[in-house]
Image (cartoon, rainbow, N blue to C red; front, top):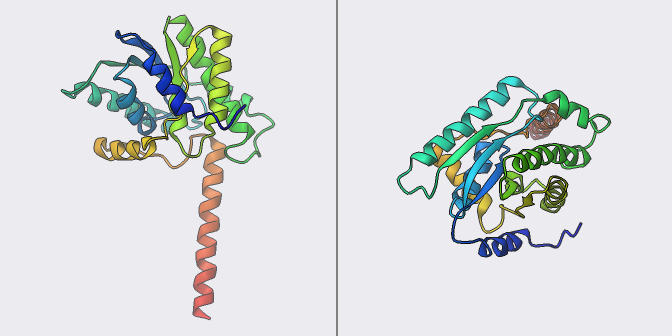
Length: 227
């Protein structure tokens, strides 16, 4: 894996090679906020189907909330008078047990490590398989918009999944060129729910641990000040 590849540049090169007519893109989305900029950007070039497949979201109520936010965003973007093309939506199966099986033995890995890579592979493999079955021209994922996600690893996993199922993977690093900042702006514009953990039970525990540590440090600092 070559971490020095500029995947945003690779994306721009691929977009320039597209014919005038819109191609069909199967876009795996991790959540509405991350998809906002990706949809705004890519709908200039593609007819897009958003694929919501995220078995890593361990808690059913959290999963349902995020699905509804994704659907709401798509509906509001489609209703805009300046929209370039219609965005459609496909919800994959909700399979948290499948994620937990993929994460077996990796439960103690830190966020952003091997457990996350196994999760990427699970979601991108399902996206590639479904895109191939649907005859899409390309598939990709919104995951690379996050500053916390390893774009090199994501693209390597996506390319391998595309080769396995016979569908082209669209390279990306959507955080580049202000993409992440734009997603924050669009989240505010649409009033989107912005979660503070990826969705899995492990990331939630790690988030809560950091919050507890931060609170303890604040208490210690306060005690020292009083002394």
